[in-house]
Image (cartoon, rainbow over all chains, first blue to last red; front, side, top):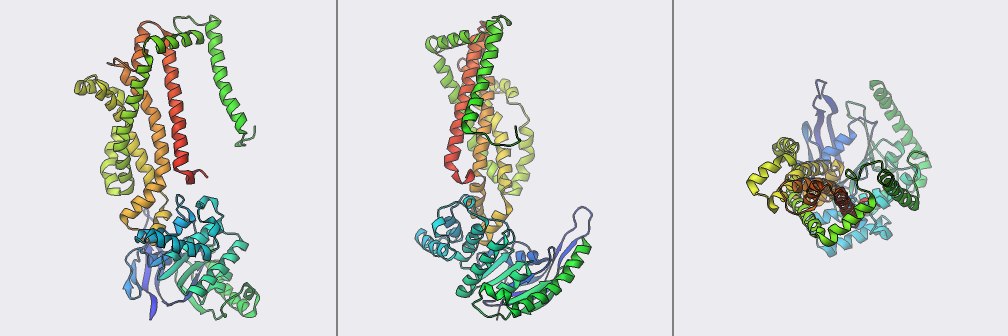
Length: 261
Length: 257
């Protein structure tokens, strides 16, 4: 059975001051299998973030419904962890306290919280920064903490909205490896939104390409590269073929999007 | 000078003090030089003499104590009211819609204009002084606190929701801690305004306090005493300001790193 079912979901933002309503997302169907790593690839303004926010429950579909384990999503909840593009660590909490925020909301005991936080600090390599405040961390470290914070809550599905978009190329590559390593070990269901083709291929077991506004799914491409993946795979012929194919798909959309603006 | 270029802390202290020196020098020049009549402006030495007399012979310390207690009393009262209401207004839009228009209207009512009414209602005792400060501060505080809570970053609230936070959790563990440093800063600012209201309250119908001493001294043309009183207010304000800043740094180390 599919973990997540997106059933005929569309989103139209109402008109502002006499303008026309914005069709952010055309009716969309998508099923995500358990433990799948799906990347959603598209140019800016294609509704990919809107789709992710609706899965998170932070936005409401205009039509259709979203089912997680067969249950309709009505609002945000701890079963869907999210990592945002902007740095959203709570600045008044230490790294360790940030990681255990969700556990605290659930009433988990202090001892258990500390244990889980310590495990995640280790998994993301931030043990020596446990008592630092977010402002004292680099962007990459902040996003590693944000990933740990989302996963410490043990969600059914992890949603990432261009989490590495603001990072430099080298840091971004390292973060991709870290995330992939965690996924290979923990086997979570992941939806990862990005506009970076290489990132989309490297991480995914399946890539969904979206078209420019109004957004809809244009292609759905399995990525059969072997696991565990090493960064060297980025120079393999199979990787290059996929990248070339996606580049073509996305280029048409980017051109359309550029003309529309 | 380059725009926004930082300076050393020594330079900062020296520059800060040198303006005070310049100020006193100009004052001395005007008074000792005989450019200003003694009746209108006392010279710095007369001011210090008068101040010493006030402190040692006329029980001015008691006046200072009274004024400080009134400011703190009225201000704490206002803060106890305003901070919770402001937080609720900032967090819950229906409460904001209900209270915001009235509070915005009320904050333009000048506290000093209430003094005659307050004397009718509460006499000329301590309660009246506290109420002047209360009225002067409470509406400003409510609005400023509401704005600071209402402008907490949306993405932090959304992040907490995806981590399983519910309504009360969002308020207690996201909105309030996030706005806390700004609320402390607002309290510091409005406490400064409260000092203005207390002196106004003491100028009318009062038998003690710095403001009362100042109005008494006017009748005696003792400008040295008046200036001393004003300077004492300035010094107390400066001390409370520094104390507030130091407390904020200790309470919210994460906001200034």
